[in-house]
Structure formats: C-alpha cells, structure tokens
Image (cartoon, rainbow, N blue to C red; front, side):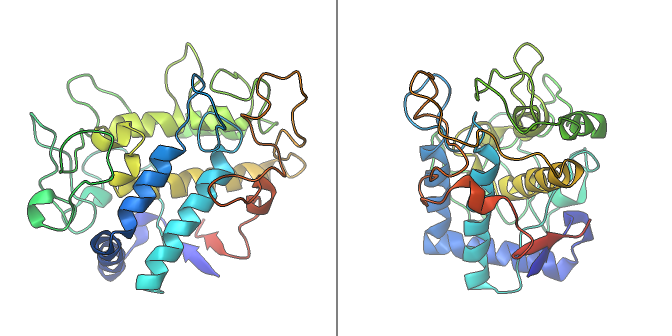
Length: 285
C-alpha cells in the first residue's frame, strides 16, 4: 500500500520523480492513450450509449479505476511515484506551488493561451498534444479566466456536497438536484457549474474538453475528487452506491446508467469493485 500526498507536501525530489515519470509515459506513447480513453467515454446526457465516465452514478468509480490505471503506468516507470492531490479549496490562486516552474508550470500566455513555463511547455520539447479534440500541438491554460473571472470551489461548497446523505438519485444524470455524486461532479441545473466541473473551468484551456487529461493537472484534480468520495463514505457509512440493481425495462436510463454490479467499460469491472481503496492506497489526511 502507498500514500497519495497533498501536492503542497511534496519535496522537490518527489515532484521531479512524478514529472519525469509522466514525461516518460508521454515519450513511450502511453500517455496519449489515457487521453483517448477519457475522450471516448465522455458521453453526455444528449448522446446515446452507456454513460460510464460522466453525468452518471459511475462517475466516481470510473475515475477511480482510470486514476489507478494511470498510477500503475507511472509505477512501471518509477515504483516510488504516486499521484498527489490538489486541494483546490486551499490552493486557490495561480501563485500556488503546483503551478511552479519545477512542477506543472503556469498559466497560458495571452492570445493563444499556450503554456510557456514548466516541464509541460511545448517549447521545452517533451509535451506535444496528440490525443486531442481541440486544435494545436501545445498545452493551453487560462487559470482563473481573467477576462471573465471564475473562482475555485470553496470549503463550504465541498461540505455541502459531502453532507448529502444519499449517493445519487433518479434520473441518474446531470439534471438530478440531490445526491452526493452530482453535487460533487457539479452540474446542478440553474445554479452554474460547481465543485469538480468548476475546477475544469478555472484551469481552462485543455481542461475544458473531453481531452482534459492532456493537462497533467487532471490527475491531481481527480485525486482530490477521489479523496472527497472517501470522506463522504466515512461520513455516511451506511450509504452506498446507487442504483444497486439494473434499472427496469420501462426506465429511459436503462442501458445508459450502470448499477452496482454492471461492468464499466473499458475494463469490464463493476462499480462494486471500486468502493474501497484501502488495500491499495491511503491519503495523508
């Protein structure tokens, strides 16, 4: 078992090991496959097919498995590396340490939003965008969206999600107004994007699209989302993943929403297998 740390607690050597492992996955071509998988399973309410990764109850177990697959790939490069988490309720500005030259680099320049600093800047030679939905071969960001400012979620907003006593609720999509999953994922119709979604909006650039893993901050963001799921589970130990059983023949979400024991693509593992991470990793909080 290993530990996922808060990124602010990483030593300089730990940051370098993570960056070097990510760059090596990129060099091998493995990183771009993660981008393609995420884009492939970004299925919205308006599209046909199974919604495994987003706008559905399996949002959390699907991303837990996705993050584990990435972490295992990193550990094949360097067994001492794990994914740190970014607590965006605490590290809320472009001046936070994770945006430093020695770690993820900073925001994009004006005009084309191209990231010019840090190891993932295109001009440094190690980070060319290939698995993409958007145009351009360089990483883009627009931290905080200065032209139309957006703020990162607060601790109170996270607490509001964690206080939900049920995991999810019908109609099991982006329109549901109760339940932990959508309060955390952050669609909430009529109230703007919240929590997870607003973080993608705050970072901007590649983090806005289905190809968001093109920005390595994606992994630190989703490690914190995973940690929040862990906190919710500990706060509500009698609550569980919903729906527990396959939806009935007359339910319009049947075949589109995965219940507890239905396999999640592309790994063919059910949400039930991802409800407890304690045999694999722990968080330093």
